[in-house]
Image 1 (spheres, rainbow, N blue to C red):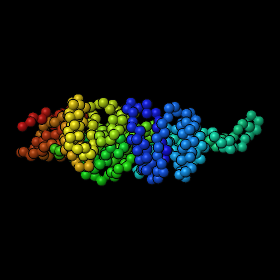
Image 2: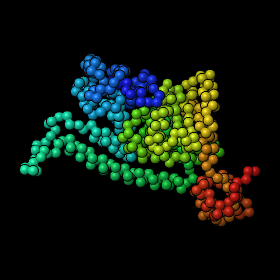
Image 3: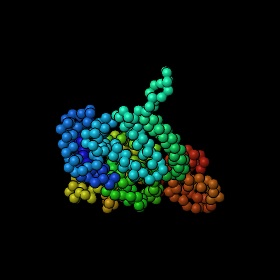
Length: 427
């Protein structure tokens, strides 16, 4: 595997070169590639024809011959021309960062929706790779007279076939998205709020998901171990319930094709009441990873500085000693009150109870608690309350149920008018 050290200057936070190289090799191993060699190739100027300078291209040519390499991975975005020229120079297949991530996603997608989204992104990427490079791709001239122009080239035919397939995939995805909207509407009829996990890939989201929900979602020390979204019930400290959603991990320079294609999957994030931004606080590039996640959230139309909606979770504190943890807690305590963060270890469970309490408090802050009394014979009314409100307390007195419920602001007026509910009075 070969890696070009590209445009770090475009990032607000300069990434550590060794950390980027480690991430690139991790991406390659994620699709079971055997790494023959990995190197950092500093460049002062990107060459339009080959990305790398002539000397570096020749150096890598020698390495390829010496190791009998079949695939070269460049940890950067290559133009179609650059990719073609490097393949000619090295006489081997060349894959850029976008192509590598697409390959990983293609292997990881399990659900129908995930497979459709990956294929759509892959076709859009392939269409951009179709360049006029071989004259034999042009078909025989057809027709005669003024109709006798050049026949359809193979490239044009391929583009047309890819375009047709993209159209079919987009139509299929619309159907899947409609089904997902129905499922979401069904959940909204039940008074469960949605909490979504987001974060850089391998930040420990799935491990935290399993810890919070007692689920068994695959959690591995592997980039993009989880791809398809998962929803599970989340039990809150005082008996309340919410839905927790685990989503695909983000990564620096995430291909725009994937952000667009996975927008439907990420609708769970868009619709979430609370977003937990899970960070691997032990990672040497933790600050740069935070910026990358924020950038993707902005692409989705979410303000990462929205303290009312986003809670930051500093994961993997078990990797620090006691003195380092105390230092982290001091840093966390100095954050603004509207931008809190929570130190946890998804692996050991440390700090998880405090996080759950914060989630519950945050959800409760946007709901109203009411007291009301319902005739025990009003089965329809009692059933409606259980479907549309969170029942905190329910006691039978003289043929009536005295109840305390918590409801969204959208249903508050309905409950007040239908059941003569009044604001809850603490004992």
